[in-house]
Amino acid sequence: MELLKTPAEARAFSRAAKARGERVALVPTMGYLHEGHFSLIRLARQGAAAVMVSLFVNPAQFGPGEDLGRYPRDFERDRVLCEREGVKALFAPDVLAVYPPGFSTSVEVAGPMSAGLCGASRPGHFRGVATVVTKLLCACEPDLAVFGQKDAQQAAVIRRLVRDLDLPVEIVVAPIVREADGLAMSSRNVYLSPAERAQAPALKAALDEASALFARGERRAKRLAEAARARLEMTPLARIDYVELVDAENLAPVEIVDQPSLLALAVFFGATRLIDNAHLTP
Ligand code: AMP
Image (tube, rainbow, N blue to C red; front, side):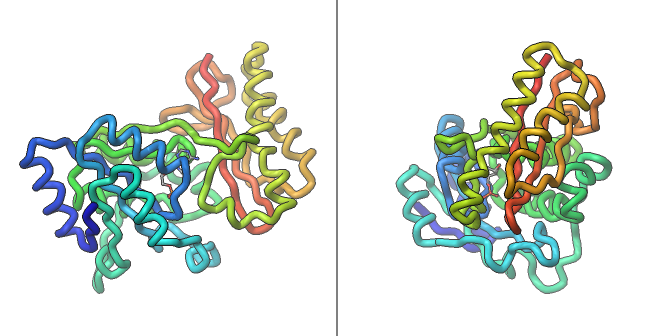
């Protein structure tokens, strides 16, 4: 496995792989890898011989007072795990290689897609995401890039920007990988105290509650969201950020679920903000 530190090295690796006739896949991550990330890597390997993983804790997507400084990191462990998963190149640039002095450009997917849901509580977050993903795609020039449904809004924003900018890359979105008790895997789960961790499966339980109501024929978004909310409100350590039903593609709020929709939620446990979502498809 090659270790790449600059966009130029990433591009050289990608072009050399393509010159050998290999397809190139990119899996963007912020590291502290877990089974969710590995599922993306395995999907990437199915579609490409040359799998690149990027590892970059992107300052531009953290707001003031968020967890940039204490975001969990373990480069050596991530490096070994990538190697074990058959990754061909680990692109782990320093902040200055991505944002050199004078850096002034940003990419923004305008409108509710970036402003709603997580964008409402994290202003500027999706500008940071869109900017860094555009840079990673430009540097690595992958044939395909794999993202997780865990971050459904991020995946929607990236699909939109790839379409809008005519970027020649196929976007693949992988299903959510969960712990045995239903908690969606996340690098941030390490922040949870034992008591918070014990109650965190409430997110999945809330999604299940609403999905069961949906399966029984309920189509009113308000009622479905209420069912999820009620389950979360039974959870003493949970503080709801949002529970919303939106169109699965453009993320506009829906009132009646008569097309593929997404039930998305964000919940605080102490200072830790967890997100999860489920598709509701009539
Ligand atoms: P992160 O390192 O948290 O920025 O995540 C990197 C990629 O892994 C993103 O595309 C995430 O959506 C994806 N991912 C994170 N957690 C999971 C999970 N539990 N299941 C599937 N994909 C995930």
